[in-house]
Amino acid sequence: MEMLRVATAGSVDDGKSTLIGRLLYDTKSIFTDQLEAVERTSAARGDEYTNLALLTDGLRAEREQGITIDVAYRYFATPKRKFIIADTPGHIQYTRNMVTGASTANAALILVDARKGILEQSRRHAFLASLLRVPHLVLCVNKMDLVDYDQGVFDAIAEEFRHFAAKLEIGDLTVIPVSALAGDNVVTRSANMPWYEGTSLLHHLEELHIASDRNLIDARFPVQYVVRPFSGAHLDYRGYAGQVAGGVFKPGDDVVVLPSGLPSTIAAIETMDGPVDEAFAPMSVTIRLTDEIDISRGDMICRPNNQPAVSQDVDAMVCWMGDEPMRPGGKYAIKHTTRSARTMVKGLRYRLDVNTLHRDEQAPTLTLNEIGRLNLRVTAPLFTDPYRTNRTTGSFILVDEGTNATVAAGMVL
Image 1 (cartoon, rainbow, N blue to C red):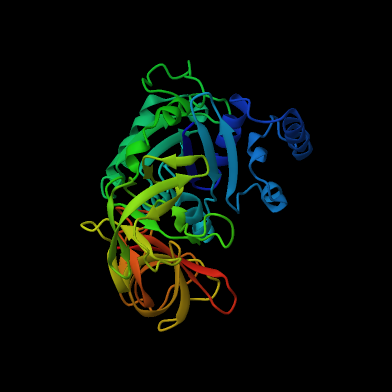
Image 2 (image 1 turned 90 degrees about the vertical axis):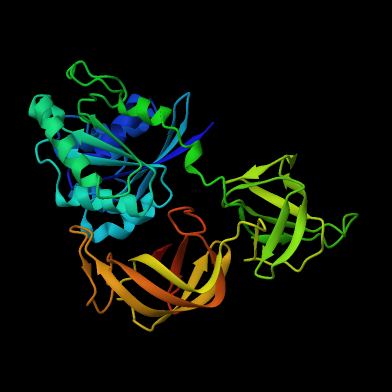
């Protein structure tokens, strides 16, 4: 069964947690004791209704303050598809959490409150979703029950958002009027909005076509582990295990190994369940080659006429996640696919204001949750594709070697 990863985003109090709670409740994906606990907490807080937001706000501080701080992942399934939903926070000081939740998502749900319309945070989240190349965007105009299910309110918000989205690179945008609290258009079509001719949110997510979002053109296989038996009958066995990061590999394909540039041919592709005729992202496989080549972790197998960029200079957009500001000229560890190296920040090209999209070229550094464009110099060559064409080979993280904390997430330009 196919898996869909969804990240939710939206301003504070737009109802993200309630919407996810409604999805879980209406698809019967929660246990009776969970529901009873939520009912008890709702009563203790004096809520007049069962507060479904409590199903996702897991940290005690979140429940007490009524806000979402960390990314909460919730799993549920329907007969058509499995879902992982990331409930990401709306506050600007948690931008790094939003980036973490959206970086692997197939779709982003952006919620706006029908009474408030498009806010600065709505624009920021749409920009982050486009920066992180989330292929499908769904704008949920929530709390329609509080504006008497008025079509005019919905149309105005949809038009304003489409106008803003036209400036961003968003491939697929859908706008749905919902009421998470009342359940309108979340799992089933609402009788309160006969003017809306589209599908419910769950039906849209079930039918979303994501197979073609993967890069099936550029064959990329970062080697994670070299499989060599040390005893037994198969001492001459040598395989290269890892996860396909792009394209399609088949036995008989001519390949080249980076960084050595040595050519070979695929002899076989094996999985836990036995040999397969082809491997594509995101399958985890072991590839065997016809030639004995010196290959180690961090090397990459690709096609002779379609290779990634091999360079020690990286031009990238980064979201700064460290509590300490970025040090211009500072040295960090860099992790890219299965390859690790050290890097130095050569320069900050500009800091990007995510609310206005203004580029500040005079900015001296990046601080927590800020986004900017960096030039990095790496001690060993990386095998990169632009993030826009491959989210796996186009992304990396920077790590502070002193504390071992992840201080930045980067996207290769």
